[in-house]
Length: 215
Image (cartoon, rainbow, N blue to C red; front, side, top):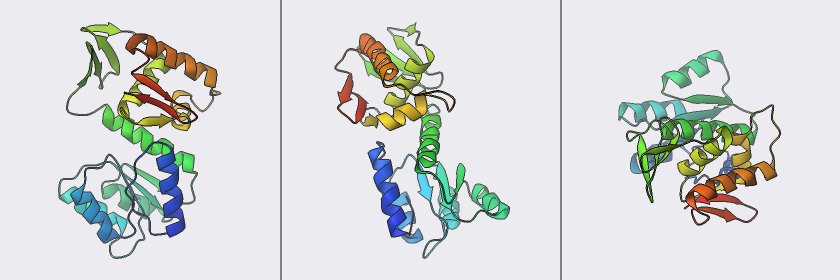
């Protein structure tokens, strides 16, 4: 994450990490380029007006080097020409400041889910005869498709995207329920029970007052 405003930087980093997303934070364009070339990230969050090299140039150079990591610009530059420059630099999304933290989280997780469903290998082996087709969001056991209702299926997809990590209640609620629906803790627990009935309780782990983890 590239953001040179120290207070906003810490706020964003803390919020995203509390939501289950690991963050590497830098404060200028030179640090951002170094971090991008030395690491493999799932998504880039880039401010534009930063020291040494602006965010547009950072992403443009990364794209020239063949780095296709999805990127979100987070900037106060809200003119139409700025938006056009952002997308022509290779951005996947453009968020104008000021913004709601939850909006950023929703957009980042949408990009992560989209990337997860378009990886080179369509299926991942979950062990014990289970496999998951990421392109079609389909679960199989010994080659047989296991039908899941919409929300349990979306829950499994989200847990697998972050497998091995804790997915917070806030992230789960944001992704399982649409804007015109009211999230429900009881319903979430029901969906967890459905998945545990399939995989076993030891695979879907509850972290008290935090969230759930696919182990």
